Amino acid sequence: MSGFGIALLLLVVAMAVVGSVYGVASLVQAASGGASMGPFLAGHEPAEHAFSRFHVRWYALTMIYLAFEMEMLFMYPWTLVVSSVGTSAVVEMFVFLGILLAGVAYAWREGALRWV
Image 1 (tube, rainbow, N blue to C red):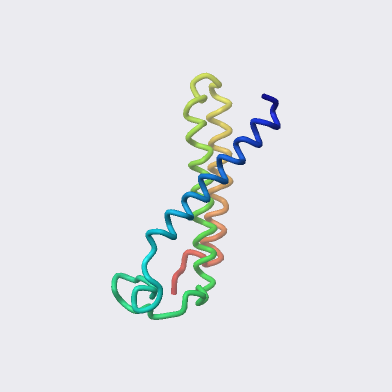
Image 2: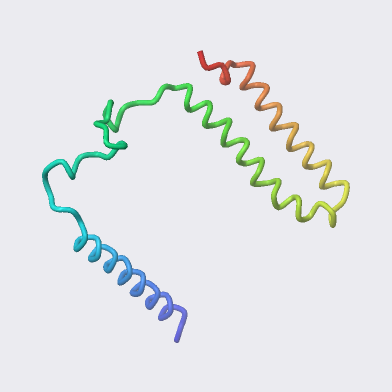
């Protein structure tokens, strides 16, 4: 079987799986109408609309969180190769952490960490 045949077979199998999931979902769905179709919030009515806006300070906090997540993304593979690479890997990681610390210091200075 050629490469295109395998890709076509995989596409057909994926479409069959998605179609079967939609079929099962339509068989087990709740009856339409009534209170069962309302949004679920621990049994309470929602206090605000789903498309309500977030305050702008959440975005700065999210960017800081993503910066720390990128740090972890680079640190996990680094731990595997640090013993084989040696001192240069340690120096590079401290340079990376220094750049990250400079970003956090800048965010702190600009007031991104101040909540009020």
